Image (cartoon, rainbow, N blue to C red; front, top):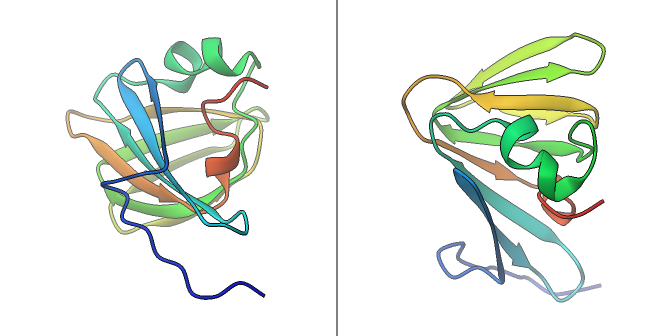
Length: 120
């Protein structure tokens, strides 16, 4: 079993940049990954990350927490969810998402960091 671990996301192990956003990733020696997603107003997965991922919808499984801003999620089956600062979330694979309003979105993702904004 691995020991205690901590990493400041202001000095991430990896930065994934894409139009209107980025994900800062911290990675422990035993494979735990935590990502901080920063998205600008006007960001939309299907416009700004789809070309990187190469899939029709986001296939990452996200569990996390919204720090600031708002985001709208629409699942491939039509289910809709809007999240705001203070909300915890679970978003299974198969969705589109976009920033709502004029405020930057910041979220912490504890499961999707391994695959978000990476080629499929």
